[in-house]
Length: 422
Image (tube, rainbow, N blue to C red):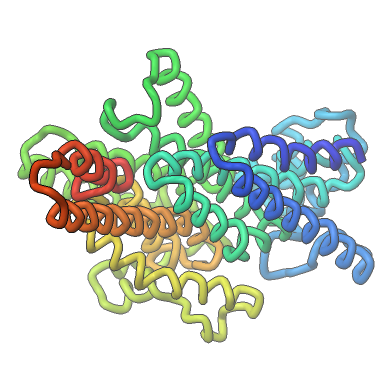
């Protein structure tokens, strides 16, 4: 019980500390969202236990039972008295070898701390979700201001219902989403010109930040290994795009990386790494209309293969998709960052084109889509400020110097407004 109370307290304290720059009402709004998530977790958990006598929703189509039966017996161990080898052996005895040991290991550790292991992991994923979202909101605040950053926080914390769903289900996707938002906040801080960093960074801070990035990439690889590969490719392509090489050299290098990546996706080695279920990798259909539609638009909310509890998830995606595409196209030159490359690769590779199973695999693109919309809204807001400044200047006495005011507005929010750090 002590472990559960500690997780609940940390769910409030850490986001509150991270969001210190926000005003009091905004922080109280965040606390209300955290309280809502915690209450939902506790009430839903109690309801499932009361109605089924099990702490999980038994669903043979997903891995909830697999994780439950392979880790629950670690409750008899001393606190933290479980090794990765133990967890691997437990999984192998029931389900065969796997490289994705991260989430079962977290489950096993929590089972050693409390007899309510499943409830603990639900609260743990809830805590990580709000901590990582708070870090991301700090970055958004610097780029787009308090109000837009809080709108992004509210969207992902309230309207984005899959965050609640996958943090409750005994699945690794909620953990993967939190790890990705940590990584997104760090890389958005690091992958920008030195003069546009959130704050001056010493060499020690840079080393520590990149070490944290490497640790997160390793952690993500233990949860879903190809996600780490996709992030690394996206960052590499970003660095090529942002390099000082000539345009022909950059295009050639990007094409070469694309060809190598597509060839790797069809290789037996890659197939062995990301084998899911029957281990069959879908045929590459990159250059067909059907393949592109399947990757970026499927499944439709009314498709029969989509489970009922995921229907609202896809209505959210479809509601965001048109405006997100407009925002990206509107600021194409300023959105050629690792976000765009990652969005394209996740949507194609993990959401229909290669591996399939889009509902869970597409989870990590939502923070990217929200970030693009915030960037566009910030740009529009800046343009309006510029227009208002110019209009007022034409209506005042000619001998009053407004050049300083206009310059301030232009740098802060006009044509040169930073979109996604570029």
